[in-house]
Length: 243
Image 1: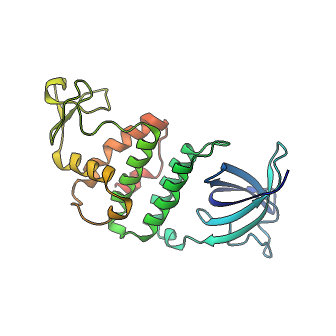
Image 2: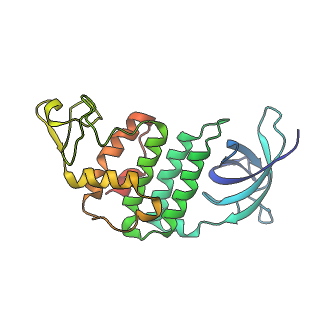
C-alpha cells in the first residue's frame, strides 16, 4: 500500500520513550490519524516547530498495516501563532476537544473538519472581546451538524411559532410556547433568543461584528447544556471562556 499524504491539523501529541512522539491529527478526507514521529524530541529533528498543537501541516504517513503508522514527513502550512495568546488558546483548546469528539478514528467528516479549520481561523482573527460570541456560534454549528440543536423557532410540543417569547421546562432541553410550558415557567430572555437565532443564521465571518455583546454570557448556558447532552463531555476549557 502507498504512503498517505494529506493536509492535517495537529490535534494531540504525547511523548513516546525518550526521543519520539505520537502525533494525532485530523484530516478532511481520512478523519483522525495517529502516527509515530520518531526522534521528534531531538534538536535536529525535521519535525521541530512543525507538529505543534493546532498547526496545519502537509503530513505523510507510512502505509497502514494494521498498527501505528509512522509520521514520515510534516511540511508546515500554517503556524497558528496568534492562538498562543491565553484567551485565544483557551477558546481554541475547547474547539479542539469538540472536534476530537466529532471526528472519531476511521470516520471522515468533512463538515466537522471545515468547522474546526474555519473556527480556528476565526479565533485567530477576531477581537479578543468577541471570542465568547464566536465560540457560541461554533458550538451552535456543531450542534446543528450533530442533529442536536433544538428548534429555536417553534414549540417542541405543538409546533407553534415562538416569536420573541420562548419557555423551558425542567428536565427538557427544548423550547416551548406559553401554553405548553410547565409551571413554574422558565422564560428565555428575548435578547438571548435573538442572539442564538442570529448566530445560527449569520455567516461565521459576521459573528465578530454587530449585535449586542450583553446577552452572550447569558446565552452561554443553553448551548453548554445541549453540548453536554449530545456529547457527554464536560469541557474543561468552557468555563474559562464565559467566566
